[in-house]
Image 1: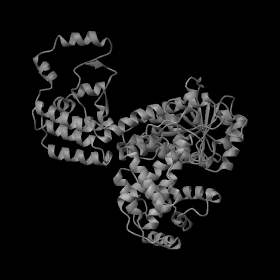
Image 2: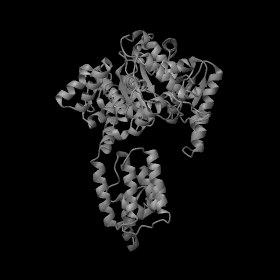
Image 3: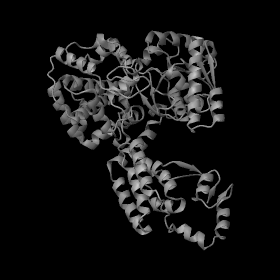
Image 4: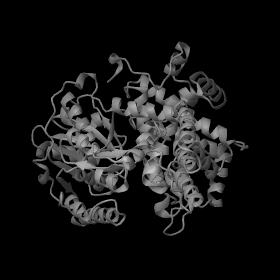
Length: 590
C-alpha cells in the first residue's frame, strides 16, 4: 500500500547490483515475467498508479497511510495473504526463450560491458524454472558476486564522488546565494540553443540573443524541432513541450539582457569576440548579475579582466548537446566571488547537471586531459595502428566512441584551431604528429564534410575506412623517420589511458581539480568514460598505481619527455596511497 503520489522502483542495477531480498524472484510472480524484466533490468521509476495497475500495490490512499493501511489489511482474505508471501507460481510466457534473448541483446547495447543487467536477466530467468527457495539462493549468489566485483565498486565510487563534487569548495560553503530567476544566453548556435533548452526544461525564462535575425530564427527553429522530436518519441508531453518552447524568448539586441540574473555567453571560441561581448555585458547587465562564459578552454581570468566586475565572472562549460549531457565544469577565476560559485552550483543542480568546480588553465580539466589522450592515439597511428584499430580497441575497453570517431563527429577543425593557437608555445624538440593537420588542410574536417579519419556516406554517421587516410598516415610517419610496426590493442589502451592518468596527476598537483574523484566524475559524465571502470583514476587504482607508474616510466624511456612521470604520481606510489581518493590540500587550491 502507498500514498497516491509515491514512486516505486528496484533501482539497484544503477549501482551495478541486482535487487536483494528476493526482488528478482517475487516481482515476476506479482506482475509477470515481461514487465518484471523491464523494471528490474532498467531500474526505472514507476508512478504509484501504474504500480497499482501492474499489481505491485494493492491499494492507494491520498492521506493517512498508516490508518488506511491497517484498515485495509484487516479486510484481507487468504488469497491476498498467499500473494503477499510471494509464493505464487510464475506464469511462464510462451515466448520466454525469445524474451530473455532479446533482453540480453538490448542490455548489451544499452549498458555495454556492464554485468549487473545480465545478472538481473539471469535471475528472472531462474524464477521461471525454479522454486522460490531455489531462486532466492541463486539470486543471493549473483548479488554477492556483483557487490564484491569491480564494476559495482566503481559505480558506488562515482555515486559518492558526484555528491562530493556538487558541494561548494571550502571557502564558499557558507556563502549567501544570489537569486537567479531569469537567464540570458548569447549565441543561438548548437551550444547556445542547447543551453537555452537546459534552462527552459528546468522552468527558467530564457532570453536567447543573436546578432542577426536569420541566425536567431534558425536557432529557434532548431529548438522547436528538438522538442518535437522528443514528443514524437513519447518522452515528453506535447503540452509540456509548448510550455518549454514558450519560456525561450529570442532577441537581437543585447539590451534585452539588462534585467536577467544570469547571462551565459556561448559565442564562437575566439578571445577577441568574447572580450567584446563581456565589455558590452559590463555596461548592460544589472549590478549583481552573474556573467558566465561557456568557453571550453580559454582563460577566464583574461575574459573577466575586460570588465569592471571580475568577481561576477565565472566559467560554465557545458558539453554538447547541452540539453542532454550531464556534466557542467564550473570554472573559478582568480576573482570569482564565493557567492557566485555557491549560486551556480545550486543552479547546476536545479537544471539537472552534474557539476564539478575546476580552476583556470588551458582546457581546464576535461579538455586538458583530452590533449595527451588524443596525442597518443595519433602517435599510435604513425607507429603502425589504423584508425579503426585504435577506435575499436578503446570501444571494447568500454568507451562509447573511440578518439578518432569522436574527432570526426565534433569536427576536426575545432582542435586544429586550438593547435594553431598554441603552436608558438610548442617546443620544437618535442615530438609532434601532423596527421590531423594534414587531414584538415586537405578539407577533411570530419562528418560535416563527409571525410575525416574516416569516410561517410551522405546521411550516414557510419565510419568507413579510407585508404587515402592510410596514405597520409604513412607519409607523416616517413617524414618523421618512424618505422611502422605491429601495435597491440593492449598497448593502445595503456598508452591512451595512462596518458590520462599522468595528466590528471599534474592537474591535481596544479590545484586545478580539488579531488581525484572530481576528475573521475568529469570523465564519466562528460567524455563517456565507462562508468563500470569508475573513471580514469579509479581505473588506475584498480590496475594498481605502482603498475601504472611502472608502465609510464617505460613509456618515458621509449618515447621521451612527453611521458615524464607526474611527481604526485610518484609520491602517491611511494606512500602506498590511491589517486582516486586524493584531495588537494587547502593551501594548494586556486
